[in-house]
Image (spheres, one colour):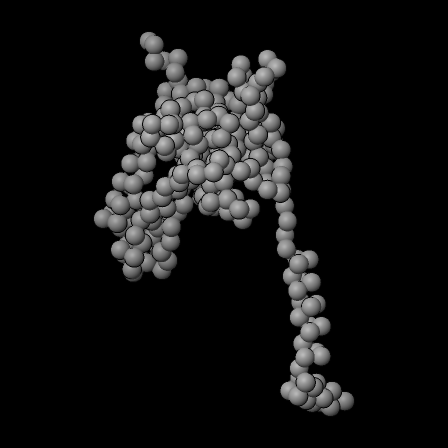
Length: 247
């Protein structure tokens, strides 16, 4: 019975593996292909308001919509990026686990070209300082058994409303060809850019801290988009409302 069949199979594999190996490998390859999970990426698409539209999805200069796509939007050739990372090998070694928290940020990285380069430079330096400071402070400790450093990834937004949402999506969806899989996001400089980056953060269900956006409309529109899609609001600002500055 069973023993004879097993012995026969063993002899076949031992002396002539090709006839059996080929169909087995072919079937395995087909099964792997069928099991690959494919899904669409949520995207915020920003276009110029050339028709003078005036509604909830347009301002005088730009309009936006959200779509689903199997691929990420492209960025201009030569779009720069910049990274800062904690040297986790220098962190305490008595914790059970050491790892890295990835922080993604669309930013103006081209001196002399990007309008907000100087302002973005301050944010970059802050992340650089924080990543190095964590070494002396022992990292970010969680539950007394885990310690983390940070990996800051900045991707060029060209100070452009037309590019900032695309850069934001590429900081999150590495599985779809993006640059990283950010755990958290930092907003870009200014309310104009954060308006669209924050919407992309909402669709990606990522927490975004917006350090340079003072327009309440940024947060109210992000909240409306989150509610419309049944998502939690994860966009938070750090500045008082711009209407308070003139007082």
